[in-house]
Image (cartoon, rainbow, N blue to C red; front, top):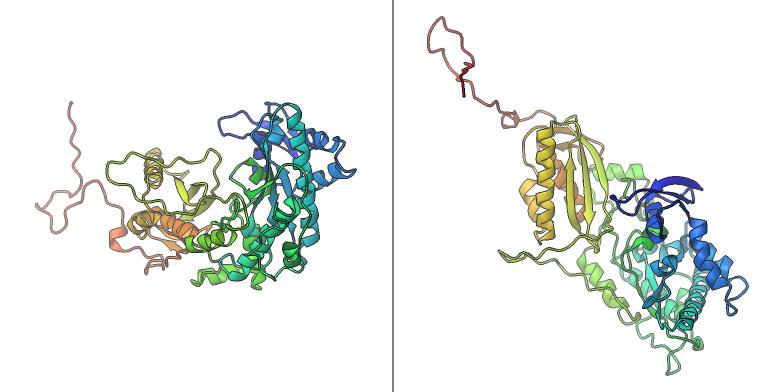
Length: 478
């Protein structure tokens, strides 16, 4: 275990949080948001409240509490916010299952563990509904799947492949059967569930027939962004693809490392290929997302909204797309020509770019202020529908000082300005476009890259012999 100070919101006072040592800081922030109050919190105490309520019910099995605690510690499943907050009057009782948590490196997908976990979650949801019924409430239980793309990456599958869609269909169909059993007609319709897939035993699990389970019908769907995602270490919410190969702290994400390993590449080899111009890790586009959405739409009760392009708004339109209160993104630290730059991004719920901040920490106050204002202007444009491509075309390869060699980012070796570096990096991170360095990557800046003086000195012969050429300083009273 480790202790750290964390807060759910940057403006909130930090709380002392205790959680497992290998969990990241984002999980600590999520725990601070999930547990009410302002004092110190621990994962063990916070989880004990809802685990004990469920495990002490007469309908619970003897191992329910231990199994729920195991699912949480392994980051395989956790209940929604209402469980942590103790909200007995909630309209819905969600439980979130992290699909990537059942992928064991070197062994593949743990099919039996997945089946057992779905049964435990279904039992916990029915007990929670019965508790709510005693107070006169009738909430809807919901089993929500998440982190599909990271699961596929751990299995060595590309998100846009048909093989990946087959595995996804089996995962959803198996969840539907094990959580709910057969429907009123005697058998759940699994028309789109494939007969076989790359995961051993999963197709048989998805094609099985289970008796109907008494009690309220459990809704099956996909999760929405929220603090439970961070608690479970989710990289891509619901069925959406992962949009960044990096973790929030700038290191390679688990899904990226898994995909590199599947191709027999070390991070060092991947860096070398990236420097040579190869696209090592592909980023699924909207078409792949749509194909996955269509493949699963017949198996789940609740699907996330279709991925749509944010249309450019007509002139004079004041509608603005709001950023989520808890947003994902990353921070990139780099140096251009010896001048440090911090670039921070914020993402919409669908993973697209919605916010940019550019901070040159060692520059003059005027320079820092201009870069901050520029980042705010770009962020407003993104939130009003201006495509990132438009900014990339406008500011990539802009030429002004500081410029030169780039340190801290292996994908870009030379930049003609801070903005050139920033927007070429954003193009690679969010558009999947790797733009090459400008031709003068040898460090010799062209003539028009030299900084201009406030006044240009006259060139040519001196106007009068015996006089000294130079700037003339004129003083006077205002």
